[in-house]
Image (cartoon, rainbow, N blue to C red; front, side, top):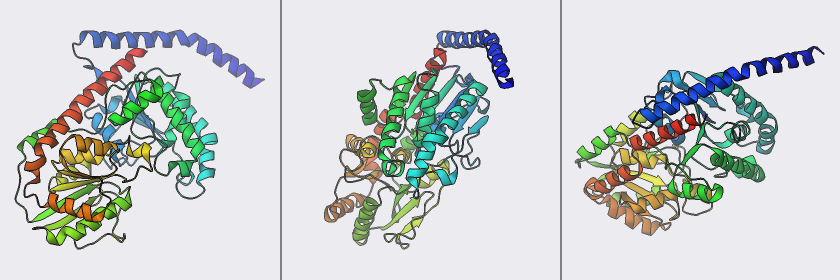
Length: 442
């Protein structure tokens, strides 16, 4: 009886206060539209908007996807920046501060990684997801963001779809990776992955504005959902990076340093490359070193050789870029088979753009249909090969590494590729214009 009376009183109060909330929302939307109309610059007042990022990873997560988000939020004031995630943060790692981080953390032991993955996935889908969706709705109600930037990644997808798709008009979607890639179908369950992929497609289709990580992915999403993207959004080069490239010149060195940034995802391809490199080292005029940068250690792998391989650890983005600029080449591998087409053909490794910013010619090895191979083939940024035969790869590596001045050979195309495809300021401006359109939806 008491609970029934409470519900009646609560719903009556809600009805009384609803017009006030609606009036406030109308006034806010009207103000945003007028500011956009008379500012002379689309997105001129963007950073006054309250922006909520909603995704699986926290503000200071490692990896390429989180790095892209942090870069696009460059100079965004902390007091207008909010975050909702499914994983807890490590605040001091990259220094990205937010006004409020609302975390509906998936318990570490409940995340489907290696053991009991089917049971854990069922728990997340049927019990955790409804709770997480309610948590997101409460967060939206409490924070009242002008715009939500949605990055549908793995287990953030179900609660995002429940809370937003068809219910919250003011959101922008960035698709960085598809959910049904790598071993996710085995860990999460094939049918469940398909359901999650369909939810992500719906989020993309229902969004006010949207973008994706590669040109092939944009075309694929257009075919699946009928919705087009504002741009290809990825990591990019800043003004100071372009200035560095325009001033860069070949430097004399006693070694040929090859850099590799990030996790080794396709270890068999990496091992093929290392084997070929080991075979040609003695035939080259300079000592060869392979420098690894990332949070994982590979010193225990059978292919690791301490004599000419160096692990540099997980560096912050500015430190990583500075250290890569001391190298001569970079390595970007993808799978040589098309067994994981949803990743190979549509995802795009952030390391490739980092290499361009460092002014490094890139050794790109992978299946010809992969997105990064298509990009590398379009611009002469280094050695691009699909050789899965060690003798052929040996010959190609020997010829490339014998070049006395790889920057002179590939520098112009590196700059052209960066200008055309990965201009950070242009991407940021387009993204902020999308936020403006979302906010004006009201």
